[in-house]
Length: 206
Image 1 (cartoon, rainbow, N blue to C red):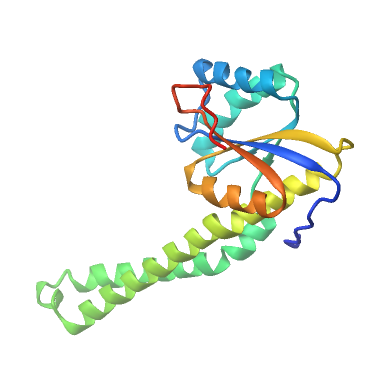
Image 2 (cartoon, rainbow, N blue to C red):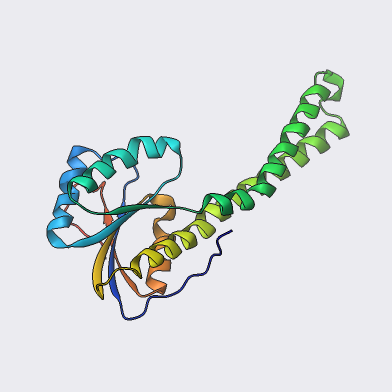
C-alpha cells in the first residue's frame, strides 16, 4: 500500500491556478474563461480532483476534452483506491452495525407500547451516536486526508518536470478549496485562486 510521504520540491518555482467550479460542470461559456487563463500562462499540466461518479460524468469529460484540444496533459488526483479501501474499513463496519440496529429498532417499535420504552430510546441514541461518528470520520477523510494525498500526487508529478519554473492548473470544488490553498502555500507553491463561476472573468483573487 502506498505511503503518504510528502517531499517538498527543491529549486522549483511553481505557480498553481486553483480553479474552483461549484457547479461541477464545464460549459462552453466556461471554456472562454479558461482560454483567458491560457493567454496569461503556459501550463505544463493540469490536475482534477473528483468526488463521485456523477461528478466524473458531468464535469470531467467536457473538461478533459477542453484540455486535450489545448494540448495540456492532465491527471486525476485522489486518495489511492487501496488506501481508501483500508481507511474506509471502520466506516463500513459502523454502517453495517447501524443497518442492523435500525432493523432491530424498526421491529421493536412496530409494537406501539415499545415506542417510548427504555430499550427503544437506548437503541435510537446508539444509532444517532454511530451516525455522527461515521459522518465525522468521512469529513476527516475528505477535508484532511484527501487534500494531503492530492498535494503528494501533484508534487510527485511536478518533480519530473524538467523546468525550474512553470505553472499548473488545478480544478477543484468548494469543499477542498481553502484547505488545498493552505497546503500548497506551506510547500512554497504560489497559489492564484480563480473562481470560474464569477461573471467578471478578469477578476483573479490572489
